[in-house]
Image (cartoon, rainbow, N blue to C red):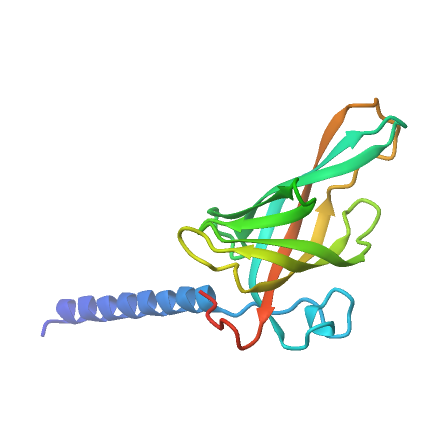
Length: 198
């Protein structure tokens, strides 16, 4: 084997090995488990209420908190509207967040069509300029036409909020306002039920 051929073979092997290592790292990140951001005993941790709970999905939201001005000149929250993405930094939309006006409860719907509707269980202030951190308990889940990823959801956390608070200045009755916000939503499920995290 010539020296030139040997050098090419070494380069090929190094490049191939690097590609395999990169693929393994990407695959490991894709199947990595979601780590809790709260601890048992804290009011926003589902394990405080149901110890056999575990986080199954975390998404980052960018959206708005909508308000309408009441007759007394103060803002009243009406509904959220947000797009959710994987926290790994992908630009693909993974879910939407909105209000079910019939029930008055928030809903999260994944691209597979599965959804969870939840009711507030606990709230913690996040500073004057940020909407509160929340723990919400699932009251209804729906299987989607392309999957059921959210159907085992039992809890939803809203964490790491930024913005979304209405102004404190008087407003003109009937006016509406959409205040930008970001947050992380962590979806929890009972251990032992559906343990697939795909």
